[in-house]
Image (cartoon, protein in one colour):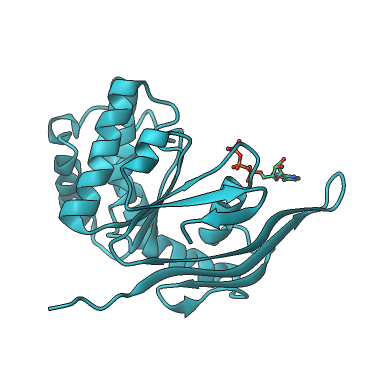
Length: 230
Ligand SMILES: Nc1ncnc2c1ncn2[C@@H]1O[C@H](COP(=O)(O)OP(=O)(O)OP(=O)(O)O)[C@@H](O)[C@H]1O
């Protein structure tokens, strides 16, 4: 049976200007759609607008024009409180730097976005955190403090943390940017596994051509425009 194509994220004619020091348009009519289960990368030269775009798509920056839909709901123009709620519920984030809290245990770090959302009890969250850790073969490290992990292990924990609320969409900004080749490969393979085994929808900004080649689709940007893959 053919599965229905469902839009997870839709950007339509997104324009963005910065005014300091002079008025500059950094995003120009950016338009694309991401469907459920797609693993998509965003590439382009330094300064072409990737991070600016991700910041808008993740609902953190509301100062843009154009239309943004998440899970088919129009989110442009919504209040900051409403956006924060949607963000906690529907989006998981992975950054170049892991931002784990060093003095907290691995398990506690993973539970944090779940505690913020307030949907699950502490017990449920502990159980969920352990399940997510097992996907990353990190179950044995659950009670260690974050500072006791290697860089690659920390990044795997950061991805497990992004999954705690079963997000509709994972967004990543250079999630392998700070890792050596061996650890980049491990982290990439975990993203691939999430795509293939869990049908996780993901949008990842990357400078790594090998990472991008391994995704289902590459959105290429140049000077604030999407030039292919939309
Ligand atoms: N707060 C800001 N004020 C003014 N200009 C900005 C601001 N943030 C970014 N820019 C400019 O907007 C453009 C796009 O920046 P952005 O960080 O989105 O690029 P990028 O493609 O993510 O680059 P990189 O790959 O180096 O991270 C750049 O020319 C940058 O100098």
